[in-house]
Image 1 (cartoon, one colour):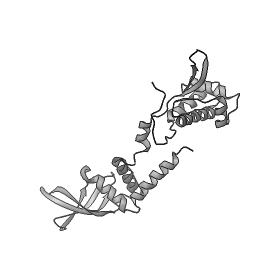
Image 2 (spheres, rainbow, N blue to C red):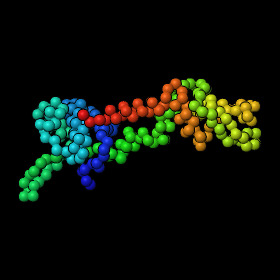
Image 3 (cartoon, rainbow, N blue to C red):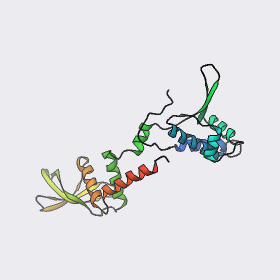
Image 4 (tube, rainbow, N blue to C red):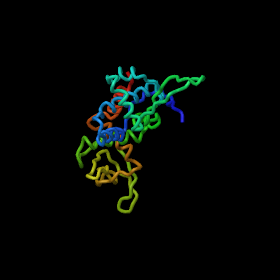
Length: 236
């Protein structure tokens, strides 16, 4: 398997799964060794960051480089690298030259997330499904069940009312306690009102309209979220 990470124009973040932290924590919890959890995690995170900078899970990182980057002393670093190897979080690779002599020594960093996996987590600003989920959460967290929410336009729904086909109109909606979106709809040209549960065919469009019109501009919120994402995960 190639150690090269696929090239990408995006600056990729360091994402360390919680299982890694638990693995390090439990290693020292069940060991007679002094607790070096923090140091071990720091060196792993630094090497992971180096893999991102070098765009390769097999990084060239001398002891001097690691000590400068982490502040860990020369006497402790070999011990920390040994712990990481025993935890199967890194592997030291000794290259040989064409003549068979030892060349550079590399460190292979394990469990580095691939770009395509990170794309699904952090770079979905053009994904309509993701925008819908964000919009619904923003609405739910900023309103109460049965609180009226006004859309930025009138919506029409084809529905069956009293056994007959009908066209319902609504611009006022609310969430019930089960988080279903309900329209306060008018039927028969406004002659009577009824509560209508918005179907999956229409709910995405209505939610986006409500979020854009209720208490804040959803478009502005989404733009802000995208800007923060770019700033947070930009490599220095």
